[in-house]
Image (cartoon, rainbow over all chains, first blue to last red):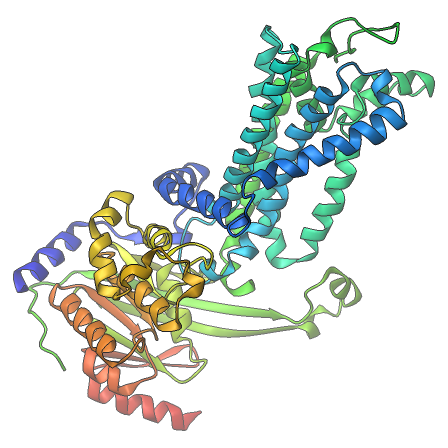
Length: 313
Length: 253
């Protein structure tokens, strides 16, 4: 036994001193490295979140599909048929579900992320972990739900014979990447702010509601362009496209919604293809790069604030 | 006092220098309250020093008791060492694998089964999946949970809950173990088992830092006592003198 102890002591003597955990991360690279070391835990936290959500319900994961499908039905009937949007937007169901799917990913990352630190107060007060892991776990579970919806969406396009076999499909990963950098950045930032000011979580709900209607999800991009012409507001489309998520939604639709890039006939009326923004590729690239910078800034703010989490929660 | 194995030239595993921690307690939490009280915010803030210029070096293989009256800063010091709280001033350095038994079962999710919680909690405490697989049977054995391991932990009795949590924690194989008032768990036989495990840890040359209110436990387990009072170290030395100093610090209050 005693030799055991001596071995341990000798081994410890050779180890370098480390600064106490939460003070030791001077830069983003360190934080990423630390998160990478905890990737197994991240996986377990994502599974915990998914498993516990529908644990005792008999329909289980189906619920994560029922919600977006219900929304699809509501928008299809109310906005598509009653308000007549479906007369100007071909394959309206695919169009709306595409928008709802990518928007759902963003909204779930941001809301889940915002609540994640306060929701895991028990752990944060008791154990040191790289705390970004909690918003990231929320992101993981959002991605899982997104994947299910994406399968349904792609399945629907195949069944309806509308699966787009074209290079436009490449817009899908680009849109997802933009949603991820902006969503995770906001999730991390807001999760930290929510610790100090609980109003943030209610503010997020309201802001997401506004942003939902400020993105071309239930109406198409052509409506925005037409409205700008009719109202003689030439600056409107440019301002509208300042929102990175609007760009991501448009890119996602361009990727999966075949009818948006073709001339279609609805009730004998010819519908031209969507007036996709000319510089969409460049825009997406810039949105992604700015998003990465934003994510890094959010992580720095988070790092500054997290030292006081344990006592403020 | 138990007999400790002798270690030649024990290295320092924890070094705290000039550690200070100030708590600011705001009485207004919502935006409305903050706006209403803006400018008069000093009135709505309280701050006090939970730790003030604490210097502490802990050698490998020792068992140190951190004691003091309520509010003396001992739990804060433990959390600063564990990296859960960042100090306002000073630094804490350490080496080796550190595990904190600050509260048993903090990472348990009531809706998951015992088995799922073992993997989750072990991962939180720093075990890899492979290591957990390896220790799994031993963890279940130690906890005496038996067939209930596949039941959701919300149906566990409080005793089963802490037994499982303790069983996970002691299988983490830390070099430094931080313990905050958690040893009084389970029934008497299980408590004895916990104490035996702690002794085994000491024989292995692991370093243990206890926070406890129980003088008896400190006397039994520690070979060094640090007494804190109002955030400062007022005594640092042997167990018997330490407990006397603790009693004195109570009467100073």
